[in-house]
Length: 264
Image (cartoon, rainbow, N blue to C red):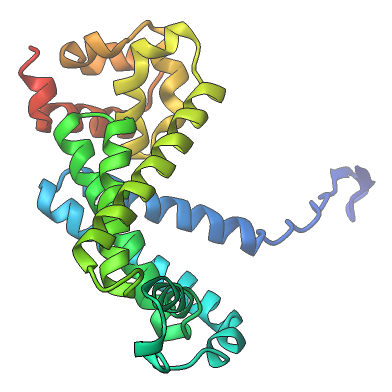
């Protein structure tokens, strides 16, 4: 905007810009949580198998306890209607006693359900973590082994079934394993990736572990498949437009992974 100056000359007046809108606190919180999650995953990927299994088990057990406590609160009315002990146990057949114990296990109070779900979720996540490290992939066998372990421990802790706890634990473990294995296979059938995706499965796992999933398209654009991971250099990553920070994380992960370094 042009205006008349005090000395008769022509002067340039200032145009004030509108005030900037304050940042969205929800977006800031989401970005901060994502940053913490990325850092946590990157740290966890560098730990030993035992440390990773312990951390994953503890965090998932805490989540399971929270869910179980909530469900126990919702089902507290049902659990209060069940007898604390089995009445006239001598006059009931074993099937009736087992059914009553199952009902008590599934309709316990908040603390009981928190314990049951903590054991189930923690065991499943911990065994899955160990199996993934051992087998190098998350497949149906690893999923079924984790489900068997979590189901058996859930049976032992909750007291479900009849008097033979060992047999009940094996039966529950097999049921959990078959159920989760079926879900895994169905999920794979309906979400099977395109044929070329198999060449980037290890790359995708590495980027996911580092929280750098958005750079998977850069690897595909440069045809940096799984077989090229041991050969990656800073210049190769720079050629596919990956920034310096992610390049350092990717190279550090490759150099610290014995499965990748032995391929050099």
